[in-house]
Image 1: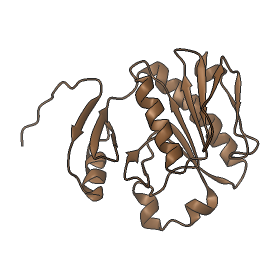
Image 2: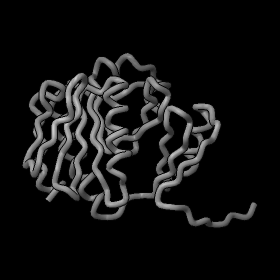
Image 3: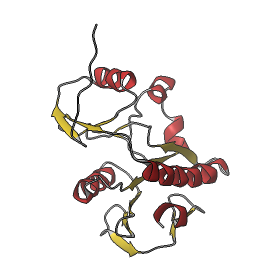
Image 4: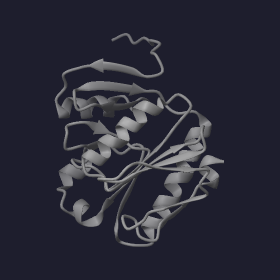
Length: 196
């Protein structure tokens, strides 16, 4: 079979009717692309990030994983982890964390595929090509589906938006650190290598 390359817009949205298994297999066979799927079944195809964003996302995940390794409270995930939200959307936050009891309640089969739950904690790190409006909608979706804490880190504007259930979004200008509050007790994210 012949293959060929096609040029796609920076973010492509397609309405495709796929079963969960078909979607999972498509993602596995196209690992050089990043996919998400909305609750309405719209497939989002996102290119890999640039070096600057990748480095800063790695620094974010490094801190979350280091903290997670010091306790047995839960499991951390990077941007490659897929989550099947209760509303049917398939999302991959830039960083995520799930309480250990929720993780332990999953079967081995559920752990191998896209995790059928919403993380307790999510982070989206805005890259230069990201729409702030779309990221805000995604953050609201996480909260509506069970996330207990979410951070939208907007490097461009040196701002962090903090999302919590049943609360207004808190906006912090030029923060140096962020607290994991009671969701990630003792976790403090140093924003210097991520935002500045």
